[in-house]
Image 1 (tube, rainbow, N blue to C red):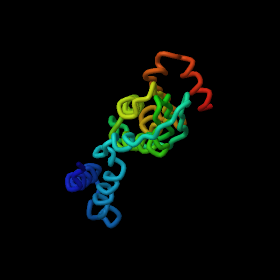
Image 2 (cartoon, rainbow, N blue to C red):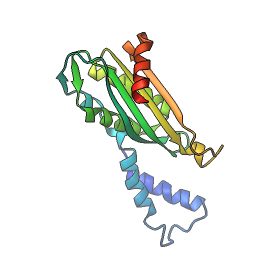
Image 3 (cartoon, rainbow, N blue to C red):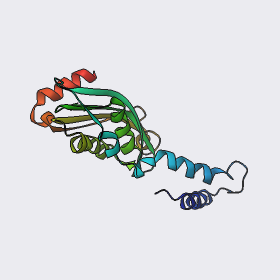
Image 4 (cartoon, rainbow, N blue to C red):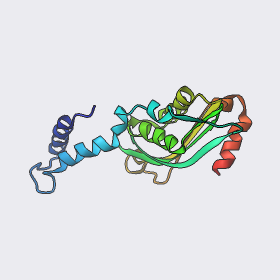
Length: 184
């Protein structure tokens, strides 16, 4: 549960720590704006992923279902700076499928938390296995991290790619290759 009062107090302290006048016209509303922003970008901390993946439909004859290029925005838990990019979510149904928008909602639910990309990738794949119960799942994420772009090493455009395979994808590398070719 997000505590707006604590966030507002923390933002005031941070601004004072930066040497700013928190009563300056441009900063007066900043603590409130940041608290409201936190409700939006960290809203996944209170979201139950099972809700998105619990309603399934019968479907037979599907080898791979792939929803690709799902835009994602998250916050690095190490620096509280954004990382953003796209997720590609694949699964091999075991007689049941989920609505396509539910895959994007699942990505959003996990991305809207303080997070690292490696963990985000695994959480999505594991949620599919737990709630959808497919024969296998595979998640690929490509993202640019602002902690690499605007601080530290300062390398804009560097992309981090992660992927996780579960079930049939882990057992059969040819399935993974098929997903990679579908993504390209």
